[in-house]
Image (cartoon, rainbow, N blue to C red; front, side, top):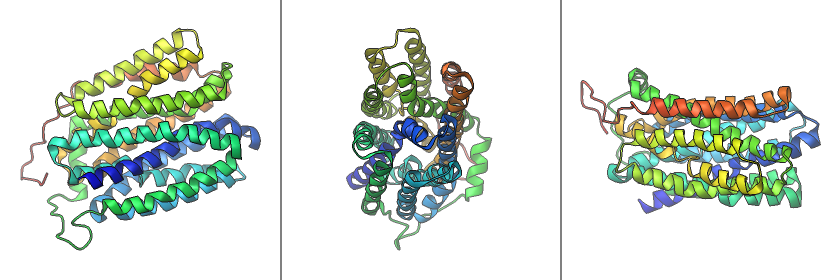
Length: 396
């Protein structure tokens, strides 16, 4: 169990740590290439949509072939995508590499794949805790990698910084060997009592699954809008790039604690209450941030608070899916829920760029993030977390 948890956490640290810093490239790339913010935001939006779409199929492959093969392919795509992000001469190629390619790579190297392994290898009484540890690792990756990425841009330039990250992401390959699972590599095959189609149809008919999916849409909208556009928002308000880098790092640091606590609490109290609290608290935090005078101190306080709530939705959401449906098709079902998250991410990051170019302000998207947070808190309250009752027994 320790090997699975350590290797899985390390992969999430690297994969998520790199992608959390992409907002630092918005102004260097758009200014150097003469592109609008909408051009950059569209590529990021496509990335999130690609991540969500390929996540469903990556989850299916991981459930059938094991996570190891998917992780190897994802690492290769990530390296090629980062190199393409550095070298693309046109907006179209930038969208194809930064958007489609990196999105597909993230689908094969992040939560849905890692959580599928944890769900199959970690006992149910420790599953939510283990998912919290993995999510906390992704947050630590943000704390570790974002300042590093900022320094790479400062010292090497934005293109060379991306090429360095392209080489670094290959470290996922040796870590993937620690996630080779019994039942996928010549040992006893895993017993399957549901087909992919049956599992998918069952989930779509289940109201609580749809409510979780709707809430996750809001999570994506909020965190990706903030992660990509807040550095530019702060610079527009006269704050230095260093404030933005420190803000993103603080989000990552405090999310280490937030995700771990959310995962641990998920073993003891209803996960729907945890999710509702997170979404309501985000709405309150954003409202206060917009009302108080903007300063480095207010930015750091907001970053710490929103960081504690950042990816803390991930462990209780995925643990609830496992609790309801079992782990037989967990990667695929988690991938579908995450697809909703990524549709929200697409809209959050794209609307940020689109409305900024049209109005010169991010205000409308900030207000949308508040309203959606309240709605997400409400839809999670009626979720039923008990195991689904089936006509015939299914493997858990």
